[in-house]
Image (cartoon, rainbow, N blue to C red):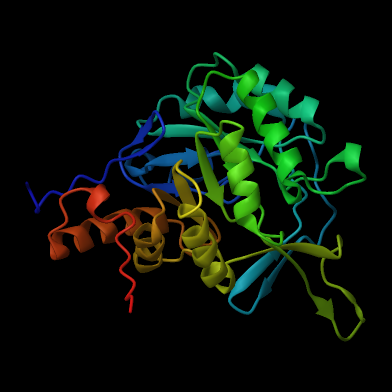
Length: 310
């Protein structure tokens, strides 16, 4: 084994990544926005901004506010729509030597199926990540991901309409995330990613009004990392499929915590706004750690958490 050149490859079902570092959807645009800032070919995967059937303008401003150890956003899933993405963004992304994962969201189960079908056989799409933290118009606005049964039905519909690996992104805004994870696994998902943002809000005490025009938003950043880490630890012990760790990863040490807890790969989100090159820094940090600890390949690191037992 060559400990001086550790093998950072990892697998999400049939999808192999050159390293476990991915960008989190909604924090990296469509990829090209970061092209002048870092070598995108060095990443394990790029997950693009979430796509809907039709273009969306999102929520009115203000829609981002900084909080202690984090950020609230209420962007409202603004995007150019799946067809414009395929036509205008994907041709450039296909030239990169990294995996391209498309995040999708719908307002009904049928919409998820239609989105998956539009991406079927599209060259350059390595996998689909399904955002189930969206409001379900058929259920009065309740998020798909808060109901294990509905989460499974969305998963089944996407799988029925795609030939690519399917990753389902779980919401933490539930009583027990393991119940949703188990149902989604049973529906056939190839992998899970967690966690999505936690619901929160901020108030301007001078005007006594919500700072976000949408009133509430999604909390991300280092404030949620301990919650995300614990949920990863719980879900890894519950399912057999790969789990991707997301939530407040700001540096390579944070990433290592998730990998040691059992995550097969990690996604970096809010940290991209602080340091646009943070993903590359994390890849190199993981590589150095493996060299220092004599770790030859990722399987020796993933799930290596040791817990003392009486």
